[in-house]
Image (cartoon, rainbow, N blue to C red; front, side, top):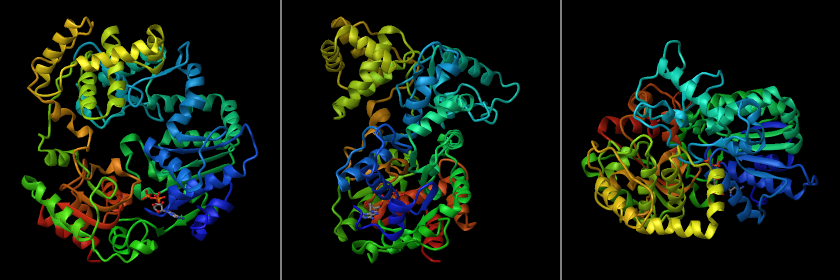
Length: 575
Ligand SMILES: Nc1ncnc2c1ncn2[C@@H]1O[C@H](COP(=O)(O)OP(=O)(O)OP(=O)(O)O)[C@@H](O)[C@H]1O
C-alpha cells in the first residue's frame, strides 16, 4: 500500500505529526492516505491502552477507510484504536457516560430519532411531542429545526430560531426539556450536550486526550460548529496530534449544520504544517479540466492514473425531455457501450440532485400526502418493513418490524436499543425471532393501495391472535406501496441510481448527472454559472461538483433546456 504513494502522500503517512490539515481535490486519495497513515501508525504502536481515533461523518465513509485499510494492508482496526463516525465517538466517550450530568435526568441517556430509530411521539395532529426528533439546539442554545422538510411542522418558523414571541418554538422548547428530563435525546441534542459537558468538566476532555493521543478526521469539511468546538475542547485539554482531511468544495451537508469555513479556518490557522493534494487519481484530464471551472483552486488537478488520464471523451452536456427521460438514459447507456464500459452497479451511475428526477425515471408522482397518523407512525414502519422484506432487504425489514411491533403493542413513542433488549430478554431471543418472522409472514403482500392493505393486515392480525391495531388517516387519498416506498431501493435498475449525496466518496467509470433548473434551494444554476459563482459561494454548486467528479472516464450532464445547456457548456467546456 505504501509503494504507490506520491511524495506528498508519503509525507502525510510517514512524516507529519502535530496539528495539520490535508486539503485535497476529489480523487486525490484522501481516504487512501488516511488508511495508509493508519496502517503505518498502527504497525508501530506501542501503547496498549491508548489509541488512534479515526473519524468520519457517515457510516459509508468510515467503512470505506476500513475497507481500504483491509484491502491494501490486511489490517483491521481494533482496541485500543477506534474507527467510526464522529457522532458514534461522541456518544461512546462523552454523551452516553456523562449526559446525565447535564440533562437533569437520573439515568444513562437514551438516543432516539434517526439514525437510532423512528420517533413516533405525539397523540394528535398538533401535538408538539411529535417534533422532538426533528428539532434541537444550535451552539447559542436557540431551538432549531434539524430537518429540511419544513412541511413536517403545522406552523411557520420565524427564521428557524427561537425568536421572541414565537409560541410554537417555545412549545417545542418545553417538549425538548420534558423529554430530556426523562433521559431522551436526539443525535443533535447529544452533540450539543457533549459540548456543554466538556466545557463544564475539562477533566473529561483531558482523559479523552490521554486515551486517544492521535485523531484523524476524514471528510472534515462536514464538521459542524458544535463538533468543531468539541474538537477545540480536546485540543485545549491536551490533544496534540490531530489531522483534519477534507475538501471544502465537497461540503454538501449544510442541512446537517456542516460549516466548510471552519475547515478552511483550521487550514489557515495551521498553514505551516498543512498540505495540499492536487493530483487526481480517479478522473481523466478532460474531466478534471471541466470540473475545475467550478472549484476553488484556479488550476485543474492533474490526472495521474495511466489507464484513464488520456481518456479521450470530452464531458458532454445534453438536454433531457422530462416527458421522455428514458431517451436520455438510452443515449447514456449506448455511450457506455461505445466506450466498452460494462453496465453494472459498480461501473455506471445515474445520479441527480432532486429526488423528483427519480420519480420521473420511475414514473411516480412528485408529491404524495402520506396517510400516517400522529401517534400511529409504527404502521408506516410495518408497511415499509413488509415492502423491504418482499424486495430483498430482509435484515432492515426485521429491524423495522420488531421496533414497530414494540411501539404498537406498548403504545410507545420510540423503541430504544435498551428497551428492545429488555423486551427480547423477557421473551427469549429464539421466541422473539420466531414471533417477528411470523408477523412478517402474516402481513399481506405489499401490493395495491395502503388503505386496503391496512384493512387486510388488521384482519390477519386479529385472526392470528396478534394484538396490534393498525390505523391510518381515513381522509387521505389512495396511495400505493410503490408510490411511497419504491425510492428506497435501486435494485431494479441495471446501474446505480441515487442522489449525489448517496454516492459521495465513490468512483464509477461513467456518470450521468441529471440536473433541473435549480437545486433544492436558492438560485438558478444558469444565474450562478453566468455570474461566475464557484463552489465556495453556493452549496448547490458543490453538490453538482461532487456528482461530476465521480467518474473515471465518461461524464454526461443532462439539463432541462438549451439555455441551461449553453450556460453549463460555456462555463465547463469553453473556457
Ligand atoms: N497512493 C495510491 N495508490 C493507489 N491507489 C490510490 C492511491 N491514492 C489514491 N488511490 C486510488 O484513487 C482513487 C481515489 O482515491 P480516494 O477515494 O481515496 O480519493 P478521495 O480524495 O477520498 O476522493 P473524493 O474526495 O473525491 O471522494 C481510489 O480508487 C483510490 O484507491
